[in-house]
Image 1 (cartoon, rainbow, N blue to C red):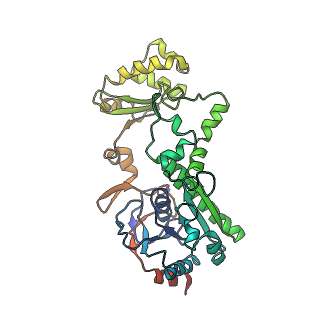
Image 2: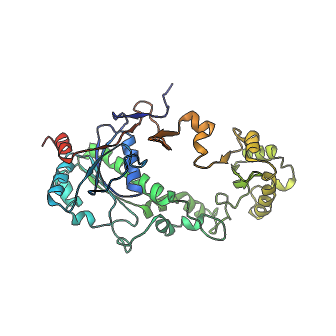
Amino acid sequence: MLDTTAPQTQTRATGPLAGFRIVEFAGIGPGPFACMMLADMGAEVVTLDRVGARKTMKSVAGRGRKVVELDLKDKAAVSQVLDLLAGADALIEGFRPGVMERLGLGPDVVLARNPQLVYGRMTGWGQEGPLAQAAGHDINYISITGALAAIGPKERPVPPLNLVGDFGGGALYLVVGVLAALLEVSKSGKGQVVDAAMCDGAASLMSMFFDLAALGRWSEGRERNFLDGGAHFYGVYECACGNFVSIGSIEPQFYALLRQHAGLSDECYDAQMNPAAWPDLREKLVDVFKSKTRDDWCRIMEGTDICFAPVLTMTEAPKHAHMAARGVFVERHGITQPAPAPRFSRTPSNIREPEVADLGALVKAWTGQ
């Protein structure tokens, strides 16, 4: 049987990226999250931060790093950084386009020292284009992709936290790009620049919906489609206790189970796939779900093929029986946090303790200089 138990805190790297060396230029949002994933998977990640940053060593997104404080406006420090990069496998930075070049650490300079380096660049708008130098945040990057316009009630779009731009379209695409480039290095012996833009990634995440639109199966406008809250069988309902449950009974066999367990015997529910009937059926289901508490509905529906789950808060989620059994959340330094994902059968990821490091010692260890 494969061992897929949740990883524990360790000091030794055991993940599939053990042995890879990555230099992270400190930033916020998607860059640190991407490096958290790489560190969880075993990579040795060295974070270069400004002097006096005093970042907490208990940060979730900053876990597993070796942290070095330095002044990148100091030419001697930049020279040491170039020495360190000569022994690195990848670099990750999230500055505006041109900043690394002005520091003397642009791709041309760095790749000349280390032709096999993968140079990962994380931005919102990308390295070029009319908006490349403009400030922005997740909400702006997903606005121009069609994603934000499709999310929320019909009255107005609602930001889906910063999951779609920063972390989904940004960090995860950066990780995929860096790993793909590292694989390619093993064949060509040559590094390259990975331009990961949040607007690019968020647009890519919309691929299925552009496909559905081309097939005539998706209408612009919120709460008009089967995945955006328009369908009565795919959505969130309030319960008698004020808490919520979610259902996703798309397939007819799952919808039949929903009807069976919720007592939806009225023939009006036969019109599952008739969009014209959805508003009325949704209103009927509002009353149905308000007739019982969330706990009641969990006893009736959880574990069935209805495609049901309670809507839990961040405090409640780690205590859920399934999440607890899989060890999806762990506690480190008094902070409850997600365990590394995904899981590996032979080279499990782990959460390593962060540590303060000396740049000179790292250069010597990585390059022998």
